[in-house]
Image 1: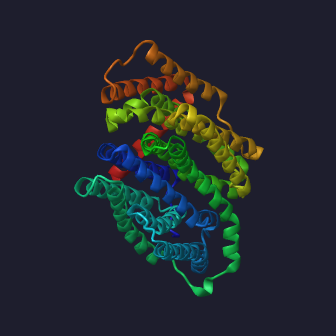
Image 2: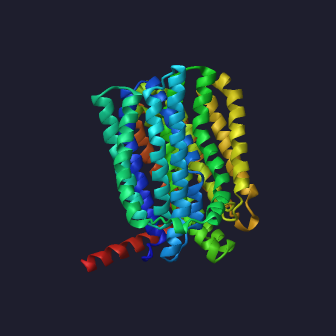
Image 3: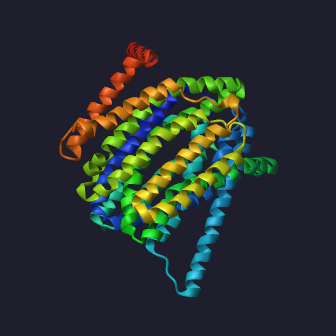
Length: 499
């Protein structure tokens, strides 16, 4: 863990590559599963999966945040052992113990009342502690800058899921139970690797047990447990309220297909960026102060704003075609959900990066207040709009609550850490996007069959025109691209000389 670490660019490249291949795996499995599972079965699968995410968010007890914040960089073997004992193994042991008690309680309750939980429920229960363990282990891998292991484990896990889930549905049964059983099998295989890595790299000792370290970790991490649960609730709430108000798993399935595909957009545009941005921002803040973090934001926000406005434009124009292409015309009702929610997820990271800073100053209660308020707005608007607009009411509620959260983050962050994107950049990207959105229907552009023909021709054409326009209008983007190409050529030349 003390070896020289790669730079920021290499970490970002690894995370981008890993997440892109994970998304590709999703694009492979998504059309297969949505065609083999009807809307009801897909809704059940997504419903239980959302509850597992909530359970895992609680089960980690905020340990992943404490691991990120209190890892002893440059520490000796004793400090590293104390870290793993108090901030990794102890919360993991507590989480597994609570899970075991819950299982025993459920078994005795079922025996006493004569109730029987479904197979889907028990598969979800078994997966929860496995996902807690894998999440904490991956956090240690990230903070120790083992991005290559994170990349390969994610790729391997996701493609194993594709094989096991699709295989189970094709060869066993076209049900959510079969799909989730395959998912659980893939998780177990990857966790064997995590167990091997933990045994070799993380020590535990009773002598290293420190109440003060555990208390410090809990004080920092517990508010973020609630914060993470609320974040997961954003995924869960819409589905629960659609089921409760409309009363149909089919409606849940329509929303889930579009929203699940939109989460793939969020995975690449939001999560990848913050995986590379957060460790660097934390290090700069600790060593150089707020000005260095603002300077980092300036460098990141210019290309990021252009890129994400372009992604949002393509999703808005061709999101429905993507759903038809991947899942068939029978699932076209999910197209508007994907187009709108995907565009929201694409644009939100711009303000989230601009307003990043509350966690740097350990203001976790403010972060909790922001997410709680956003969830309350989402719930209230769902109650108001789902009866009127159906599934799209949940989409509109997501748009308003997500936007409110991103804006509030910028309002509450200390001024010395706030760096909004340049108005010129936002105006240029926004006008280009609006021009495309207006021009396509106005001039009946790309009057092709919905699905792959319109997606490939229209998406590639609009994307290329947008990129060329950005390069022509902003010299800084041209300079960044030129520097990137020079750096890439230099690395290639160095490797060729070395061989």
